[in-house]
Image (cartoon, rainbow, N blue to C red; front, side, top):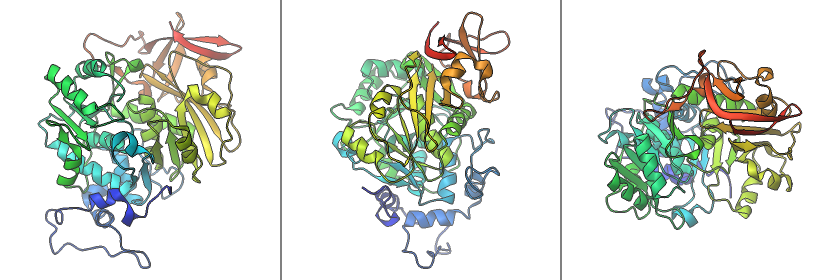
Length: 484
């Protein structure tokens, strides 16, 4: 399977091209853009995005930041964005403006087997169009700006687009693991105060939309349940219908609400992270993974996870890369995906390090990121960095901080053992060990706090946030992050 489809054959663009006439105020006098000489005619969505480059709104939204990621023509979103740019949806629009044909999201080939929906390869332009349509539909709901909206999706392309659409609509996304049962979903919806949830009709043998309908019956604060099809249950809003009915075009991201995630995967412990803090955490991660524009992140982490958001969607958008997620692991499909001839950065659970060390890795694999969640033990390193490949460890500390380090450089095991000698950027993230042995954190990338009333983060007199973890050290390296 080829990684990219030609624009005229991209199913996402074909769907997005079914528009209902020209944008308001742009009738017969609206000037068309002719395709470049020697190229095939482009789809209507691509032509629209070329036209919209002349819009002052999109020009303001997609204005390049002076620093470049890899060269003078690759714009970068600052980790400290100006007001109105504090969101990943702004970065999506920025790349769609500069590189509309670049691949954004790739569905696994076997997606239809567990969702009933075909696999799609999404360009940045097509993804931005669908995000705009969904965002316009969400704005029509009677929800105040900044409402918290759950995302109970499998982590595929629809989940990524739904996350960005919630941002673009001015609300706060809250990923929910699709594997959670009804009791955990109900606890999460109530503890996070969710007003709506976006989900899907089917995931394997489970029916997430029906499960959330039952949750809504027991919690009246959950006002809207919407799902991607097929066979959306009665009483559930069809997100596919929303995509077809709403208009797209440029969108002005009204973000700033950040993200809600759950500490240690506990539905009773929602954590709120401001938008600037999320971007700082993503920038900290991307600087170590070293993803370049047009490269690919291949991720095996499940959706509904802060680690997957930071190392997956966030890093891909900040770098201008593509993201391919395998929400259902199958060895043969993974081998095919890994072998594709494109520079690849693999993100997977740390428990799979031994499995990965036993196979021959392709020369196109530029980095491997092993994701841990505290409390966690660090065994002997089985993967080692080379001149061509970086090995990165990522540790989630109760959704308060994501610590990332490259082996042989700013190694996580060395940082946790002696934070004072670590090469951490103090503005984004600083760490120290308290007299009682607990880890304490400070910095923009650690600015997350409990969402529930009566649950306050424990802090020191000088403003450091105390965690519930301590490190076990041997020979100058941390062997575990344990509960204090």
